Length: 526
Image (tube, rainbow, N blue to C red; front, side, top):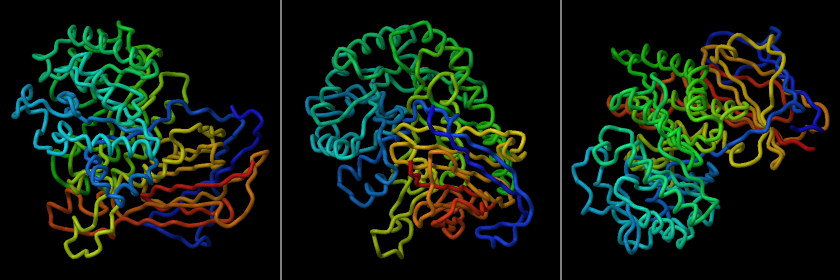
């Protein structure tokens, strides 16, 4: 793919002792390391590559023009947002003035929606919200995936919604036709045959409005290891089989749920979290790929995949904003990237499930004053557990990127094969930057001895050309600010998370602590 680029990168990774390490003296490392070669000439163009965010309650700082919180969000370099989020989408309708809830059609006690979200109900009568959303999207060149109400809405209302968004400067690049409509609570409102007929009519309306807008239908989870509390496996298969016979849409929107219940049958934090780590490793080693390959088997390679939500929310709130969540987000992004390198189906969009929330536990960033009453400076903000891996990977999304394929697999350490340690590298030609990621889930620190650049892709020693960011913690249940664990036990301690940034003049002698995420950014001169 990078035909004229002839280069190899030598990575020497050394397995060390078993104690917790954040910074080690180089003299302590004496043994020989392992060699991993990465040949840029054999690199692979990354397809898809669109990581997005749920808009959800980020509308609040957008509406109030909270420049502090929006600055932290912009650091993640968002390029695509999804709105409305969750089951809210199945109740949103346009009015003469905006978008919102039609309380004449909405059952206040409906179990699938919290109608007390006054922020969303204000859409109905307030132009200013759509104006601010349009300004935010235009300023940051952000695009929107709009989730349409297929339950109560019709083609006229969908067209009205698209026109409203366009009139306020919102760049809609995709439309999802409903959210989780395969669930039992929707079946009395919309049968599958009715959904297919309605979805096809709505697709025709979208394409007539703008042929470039892609349309995704609502798919069902595909594998038995996913959370199936509200629907049977047979029903899910029938739903997807019927969808697969149709060809009017561009993509299938899927949710990926994770069931870690077996890890919490008995409360013992020192057993629960290692169990989830093992489950995560299994999922990212085998099951994510199997899940996506099942999609191919069902729908063929002609349809894109949109993963409408991934993350820990809804699994166990005990896991929210713990250090384990940082590793989960890193692993999932890496897994999708690796899948998109294969000659297979394509994950075109995938959305992190939560962005901003007034609930201090479920948010990517939170004002310290909301957590600590003694904090006087309201301009101080905590970045939460998932924020860091999302920021690490922001440099490789929504642009042309090449994966640096590894060779010499016989020399790769056993830990890399078992996924207890993972490595992946990318090159972004637009920014002339190489990005390397190492995740270490073991209790043993590692050492990356060297990145050796050869061929036409040059590296020149100079201060500031290599930036390293290290995130680590003493335990996987450590938290950045309040988590469910610290909240329930009335404990607050942010010291258990460690973040360090370093500059290197040479691409060598990188010490990778135990239980760490290690991000290396290298500026290249071609």
